[in-house]
Image (cartoon, rainbow, N blue to C red; front, side, top):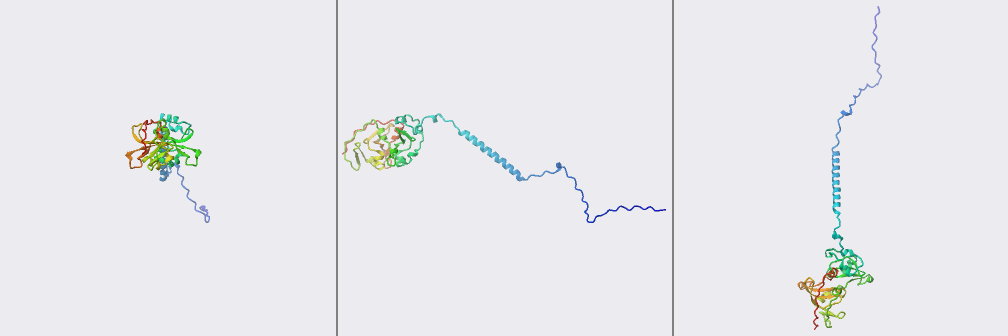
Length: 286
């Protein structure tokens, strides 16, 4: 009897230096089950800052729009009224200038650029007063009115001391009035006689005349000293000159203002009433 022989178990052939088989990776989880990543805190702060800046910018724009709407105003009827500024460099006459005034006393006027240097050279505030008109044409000549005078531009005399002159407001103001002349007399230190007009100037008036420009600023005397009642009821010792009226103010004795200049520029420009006092016959000079 023959014995059955079992086949040998299969042998596994091992290759030298072969790598051990790796374990298969687990299956990836679905995206829905992944935990959400948290954004950095600085991104949140940046977003908040941008929102705040945008809100502030919107408020600024809104404020500017409101301010612009509030600043637009319709001109009032008062702004449509004719004022001296409407006469700037327009041909006119003195009578027309006076007739066209409208609440001019409340108008703020600057010294015109052309007259700025002349204003200081001719005596400034004390001699001329404040400006009351813009630069305008008067009988074809450019002028500017001030409280105490009218300054005139004479371009044909450019480069000379007479390029800017003070107008003859004293002569114009007393037009139609008569002033009696004294008997001629010899000049002396405290009393000077002017044969050109037949009047004399003395005392404080002579001192003021000599110390503040003399002939070029005030011109010759065209009246004697006398007491004059003004339209407002006040009375002054006055004397008229071609370009001014001197007033004596005893209440200011001992100060530089004891002699002051009348506001003839304002009186002429605004057409104010004029005094009608008759000058007495001058007392003969001893």
